[in-house]
Amino acid sequence: MYDVIIIGAGVAGCASARELSRYKVNACVLEREEDVCCGTSKANSAIVHAGYDAAEGSLMAKLNVEGNQMMPELSKELDFPFKQCGSFVVCLDEEALPDLQALYERGVKNGVRDLEVITDKARIHEMEPNLTDEAEGVLYAPTAGIVCPFNLNIALAENAYTNGIDFKFDTEVKNIRKTEGGWALETSQGLYETRYVVNAAGLYADVFHNMVSETKIHITPRRGDYCLLDKSAGNHVSRTIFALPGNTAKACWCPPRFTAI
Ligand SMILES: Cc1cc2nc3c(=O)[nH]c(=O)nc-3n(C[C@H](O)[C@H](O)[C@H](O)COP(=O)(O)OP(=O)(O)OC[C@H]3O[C@@H](n4cnc5c(N)ncnc54)[C@H](O)[C@@H]3O)c2cc1C
Image (cartoon, rainbow, N blue to C red; front, side):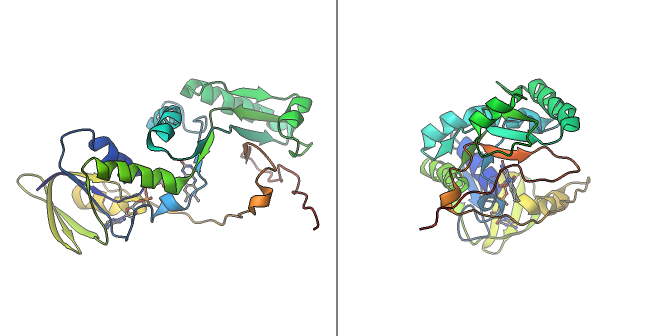
């Protein structure tokens, strides 16, 4: 009988495991794939967001800002690459500058440090010379960064394992039942019993939630396409560049220049 079973070895499950490993807790992570970081955590944009985007007063805003502030120290503790490169939200339309300002104000209310709206075109060009001249203003967030998603996920899992948390791979949780002392989890590898369950099953978290809760939820996943540029384009900009969300979608930076060999 475990004290805690965590379903899912993505970044959320492994971060939970690592946190629990600080305590005298008999805990285990059950993962249906053959390794950690096989779900959404392996295929994201690698951005450690500053925290101006999340709705003001929401738990997401609070955790986003706190998580961002934890990342420099965490990357040193667990030895994974993290670069606090900062980010720009680029506004190409003068009429949309109030939207940029609104994003700034939300960020300040969320507790994001050192945010700045820059409308001085010379300064924008100096900071990002390859940004389009059509940029009317940018929201500069120096606390934003990028992280290697694999190394982050693996580092959390390795630290949790070293500190005594069990990991069972190729183990799919099929059903959860309430028992007298906690929960019984029926899996592809037999029955597991635990006092508590952490549901970190990512896009499938609603399945387990709905097995035990009267309030039903539904997760609607979305798919998209990413264009991955060659490493030779890596220095084209030095910050993460976002377009200000709006009706007009235009390119924010000039196409990279390639040198013919
Ligand atoms: C295109 C894209 C870009 C993104 N960019 C960013 C970004 O730049 N910055 C950012 O912070 N976030 C970003 N995100 C969001 C981020 O990737 C996710 O929020 C995060 O990875 C979710 O982690 P998780 O651990 O909850 O889920 P997952 O990584 O999906 O982990 C869930 C795990 O549960 C396992 N599992 C599921 N069902 C079962 C079962 N029945 N039994 C056992 N195991 C099970 C899965 O195999 C999986 O390993 C992005 C997401 C997408 C899709």
